[in-house]
Amino acid sequence: MNDVLVVGAGPTGLLLASELVLAGVDVVVVDKAAERSGQSKALTLQPRSVEILHSRGLLGSLLDGAPRLPAGHFAGLPVPLDYTALDTRFPYQLGIPQRRVEQLLEDHLVAQGIVVRRGLELTGLRQDSAGIVASFSDSSAIRAGWTVGCDGARSAVRRLAGIEFPGRDGRFSAVVADVVISGVEPGWGLPALVPRDGAVMTMVPLEDGVHRALFTGPGQQNVPKDQPVTFDEVAAALQAWYGEDVVLRELRYASRFTDAARQADRYRAGRVFVAGDAAHIHSPTGGQGMNLGLQDAFNLGWKLGAVVRGDADDDLLDSYHDERHPAGSAVLANTRAQGVLMVPDDDVACLRETFVDLLGVPEANRRLAGMISGIGLAYAGGEHPLVGRRMPDLTLADGTTVSSRLRGGRYVLLEGGNLPAARILVRPDGYVRWATDDSEAEVPGFARVSELRVTTASTTR
Image (cartoon, rainbow, N blue to C red; front, side, top):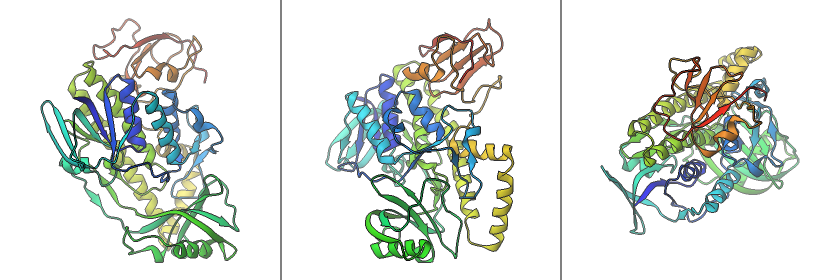
């Protein structure tokens, strides 16, 4: 019997599997697609996601040649969110197509001896006190101690586990398309998301002369989501926005999406978990979707690994829902707010002007930058004010960094030196689990996962 079955080999499932392998857990990864599509829904790694990959030594070649955007945006407002004000080594978004993230993570798994089993569509799932049994369309079955559904918005795992997915349907429809064009050369920067004549358009470069266009207008409304996007539809939208000099040479990929907002009512049902789009869907505004899923995986991975190893009690797994459900709710809320600000209405235009003024206030800008980037996220705290907060990547007295010490996926104990507390216990995902100003205090018993004792005397970045 396998320790954990991961259903879905997108960024969330692949990072989760990587975390489980790091924890010494036997994991099997399946996906219903026969092969990776090669298409990229997401285009951006936010600063917190960059930190996550860096802390596991997985950032690698993603930094090579990738655009580094020192700003984010909120509803496409003309005042960018200043990421350079954030307390991070990576004060920028990385312009990285999702397929490159998937390729890097899958290559890493293959190097660890884990090969994704493709072409397996989940058709049945049952669980008992000993584990789960998953059935597939080819009549095969897999038994495991636990399973995690990372299988997208229409998650079979979520449905079969009886997890509800409340929320609302989309109120508008939009198109995303990868195109080859001539006649316009938009550069990386703040997306042009200001509504105009009932329409919205943004376009950014990908690779090899391909651009990503995202648009919506009257012609995209009340169209079934599964209706194919035509060449003529995309060409007309581009010319309406950029002028007749723009010529659509090639349509590589196109699909429809809505601003539907839904969230699983619980992220755990016994031995079954959901993560990524299986746990939440929302508008892509702000570029948070793939990042939210990666952070789900990073939160759950070390916890599930610790329980499987016997280093933690089962109730640690309940903290996955307790921490990540509010994080998902916050993203649903801010994307819905951004959607309101993009409505082409005179009253909303006044609201946009108010937000533009507020974004000029450094503290307000920094607050929204922390929200969209993921850097500002904090979990429920404890007696010490540091508990629940993300630990900055300090440089330690021996020349190493906090992130390098986290590379093994274990707790790290920091003590001495110029720290904000006498002792700080950092969780494997980089958040403070325990802190004290008493240098003689005993480390709590829950830190059974081989912690590293480190002395630091520097907070130099």
